[in-house]
Length: 193
Image (cartoon, rainbow, N blue to C red; front, side, top):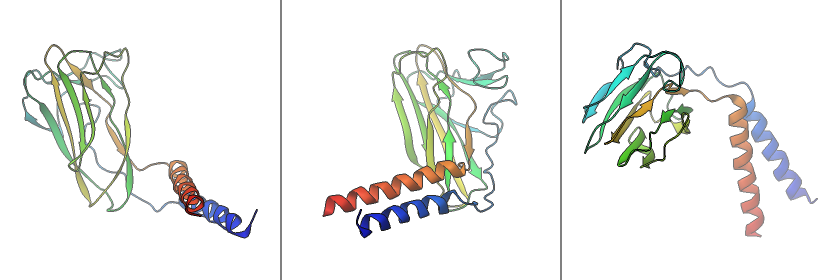
C-alpha cells in the first residue's frame, strides 16, 4: 500500500475514534407526550382538519406501540395534523427522530413527518401493516428549538401514531457516520485519480 492510502486509512480511523470518543454533555431535547400517555394531546397543537382525531388508551396490544395509549387520526378529504415546538436543542447537533406509525391500508390516505419545515416522510396510500412501521431519521438542529409536525389523512379509517421520540444519537452511531463519510471521501479521492 502506498503512503497516500495508509494516510487516508489513518485519517478515517482517527475521525471515527474522535466522533465515537466522549461526546460533549448534550442535553436531551424536550419532547412532550410523544407516547400520548396523558390520554390526550397534551403538549401538541392540532391543526387543519381535526375531525376523527383522538387518543385511545386500551392498554398494551396491537393498536399501541409502547405503553398504554396511542393517537389515532382519520381526517376525511383534507389533511389534519398536529405540531409541537421541541426545546433543549443545541444548534448544529444531530438528533435521532423516531416516529412509529400504523397504516390501515385505506385509500386515500397520507402520513407526513415534518421537522423544522423539512418534509422527512410523505407516505400515500400505504398498504396495511400488522405491526407498527418505525421510521427513524437523523435531523440537525439549526437553533435551540425546532417544530416537529405530523399531517394525516385517512378517509376510510384511521392511522395510528405512538412512541414518538427525539434523542441524542449513541456515540457508536456517530462513529459509523464518521466512518461512512471518511469512506466516501476515500472512494471519491481514488475515483479522481
